[in-house]
Amino acid sequence: VLAAPVVLRVRELSKSFNGLKAVDKVSFNLHRGEVISIIGPNGSGKSTTINLISGFLAPDDGLIDINDQAIAGLSAAEVSERGLARTFQNGRVFGSLTVNENIALGYHKKLSDTRPLSSVQDTPIIRWLNLLGETAVSLINGPAQKREHKDVSQRIDREIDYYRERLGSRVNDATYTLSYANRRRTEIARAHISEPEILLLDEPTAGMNQSETAEVLQQLLYLKEQGHTILLVEHKMDLVATVSDRVIAMDGGKIIAVGDPDEVRSNPLVVESYLGR
Ligand code: ADP
Ligand code: MG
Image (cartoon, rainbow, N blue to C red; front, top):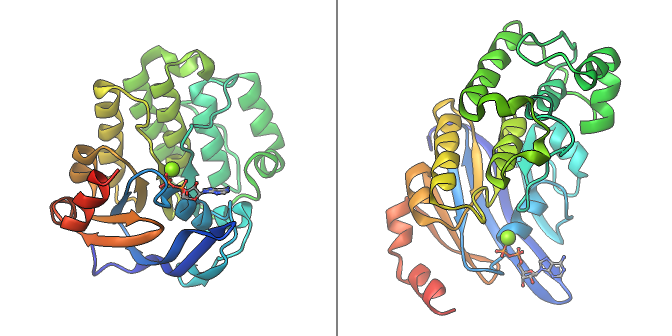
């Protein structure tokens, strides 16, 4: 994977809050098809790093490039147009929309033409999206990425089948009626279906029990198998070790170790940073 082109380049990224260095000269490369996990104790700067990269915060200093284009300081909408999709530590889906509809929002972001989807149930919101097309997409997600894919409807049908298999009839239920774990899986599905250059996931298994965590792990492995480029913040070391090509450990806003999962997990500095709290 390290021979693949660099999709995300971060150099000397820094951000302070009231004099506290939340992120302190962070540098790393994320390669196409690579999965990197950021680990570290609470307050070590993981979420701030993700928020800087996704344009939810402006850096004080440093460079961020997506496919060699500078994006540091751009708005979240502009960064998303450059091909970055993210999920949030607390999970954000449209609760009154069904799972299908939430996933379809990701699809609609992807397309400049809005052909109807055969696999998505015909509902008022889907009819409305098909009717308004690009305008609706812009209202919800910012401007659509103008990319044509001949086989896109077929591919999306397959993706929705994947989720239908795993969520059963629930795909046509309002998302707020689902478990927290399934709402978060829906959020990942929506981000995934927009076919981002980079997928940023902030603690996708936070607050989940073992079986829910295992389901999210399956979903992450499915994304990885498809060659997606993923930057993940995650605490659960077994999951991190299973899914990651490389791990970045942070403490006090700085990167204290980078490498393959077992290497980083057994690094004395990393062990100390966890035991020290
Ligand atoms: P992590 O995600 O690793 O738990 P964060 O990136 O959320 O850590 O936080 C890093 C440090 O920055 C913490 O000390 C936190 O209190 C501080 N911090 C994060 N966001 C803000 C903010 N919006 N205002 C002030 N301080 C913040
Ligand atoms: Mg966090």
